[in-house]
Amino acid sequence: MQTRLIDTEAVSVVLGAVLVRGADALGDVIAAGLEPRHLPDERDRITYRAMLSLATTGTSIDLVTMQKEIMEAGQADAVPITYLSQLGAGIPVDIDVTHHARELVRIAGERELLNKAHNLHEAAKSGNGTFPDAINDLEGALIAYRSHSSAGQHLFEAITEDRYRLSLPEIGSVLEVDRLRREHNELLAELCVRCRLPGAKSFGGTLSIADFNLSSGRARTERAKLLASRAGSKSVDWTAALEELCQRVLTAERQGQPAVDLRTLERPAPDDSIRIDGLSLPRRHPAVLFGDGGTAKSYLALHILGNMAQRGMRVGLFDWELAGEDHRDRLERLFGPDMPEVVYARCERPLTFEADRLVRIVREQRLEYAVFDSAAFACDGPPESAEV
Image (cartoon, rainbow, N blue to C red):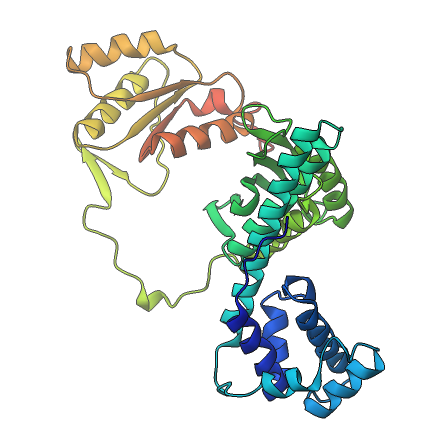
């Protein structure tokens, strides 16, 4: 079945503009993604191929050169001179040829989708074993159509200073890198790929999650093969997706935060420090409460956090010593049954190993202030050692 989704006006505008304006208009048309196969009529496809051929050889595009090119190709009967002579008639010099070229690509995608859907229906009725191939063909046409529809709409986000996300709506996928670090002058990260393609071998929507070397071209090729095998679709260009992700992340890392003129920055707010019962604690910098063992440092820290929570702040307590039940008892003793909210997390390993988990808790719980109790137990070795 051949559908008749055709925009003859757009065809005339695109080909006519190229004939009138030459290589400049052709460059805009090519940039819009228009290929000969996107044109619905063989006569138009032959004409466009002739224009591309002339541009490749550096020959000017006009009525004379076009007629000669088509004759030498033995296709003069398919493209009469009367058709060529009418192409550029009435085409404004400043017409937006890019818009019309994109429209032709879009309509061609719709034609392809309808044809592939028809083929799928016929394969299902016939039962001749071509149904899986028809599904793959339809999926490929759908991805190509979505890719054009969302061209330039890939969303790249810097979630935190070591976490980036690239969303690819045309294939229903998200590529996210986290825990960025430098090793031997190469940028490494944990790459998580989530995919909603039908038939994908995912776990909870995650296609793959593993360490990844963003600086290695070979790593991109190998990971693309893994993703393709798990996605179960031959239509997704995972190599291109990974290449885009790597380039964007590497560029963002090189640029970093821009330099600023200190004179243009705002002064610190008057309430930049938090005062509780005579203690002044910096809001944006670490502070240490020091005292001998058994001098109620943990009680004091919980008292401070409770007061902050009563002021509307989101606070957390990360503890290497006491269990959550002990802190809950202390919180009630300090504030009574109407206890303020304090987010608690038990830590078992040195801070160097717990850091990723705690960062996630801070991010997900939107914490504004946290207490780490205590520094000695959080160290990966003797606190007095210079190596710790």
